Image 1 (cartoon, rainbow, N blue to C red):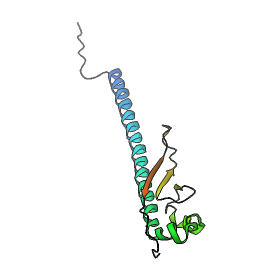
Image 2: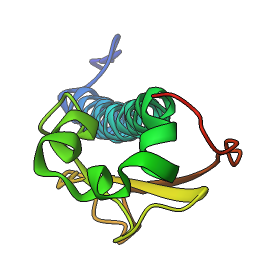
Image 3: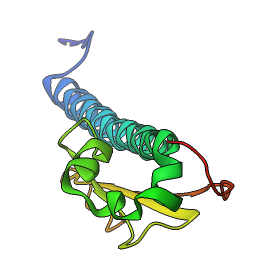
Image 4: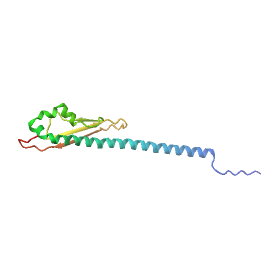
Length: 136
């Protein structure tokens, strides 16, 4: 009588383990890719906040002109270009007229995320009313 003892794994067991490991690794890679997409969007959000704050900071030295001596400066093309973000990937939207409570909106495009969320930041800066006779 011949007794056959099988030691080790069969080919079927190895193939099943390989498929399970492959699916697990693909799931991890997919999670990593999604994580990188959200990190990039978070980076864009942070940069757009910085760009919006830069716009408000650039207005401060011209506040006297905008409030009293030359309000038309706000709509001047060169001044608008001066206020524009330094990176072309971001778009600045300003109100039609200057006010002491100025809302600045910065938007960007991120085609990697399809969650239908708005890629924009709105910051409102409040400027004090300067006294008559201020010098620019």
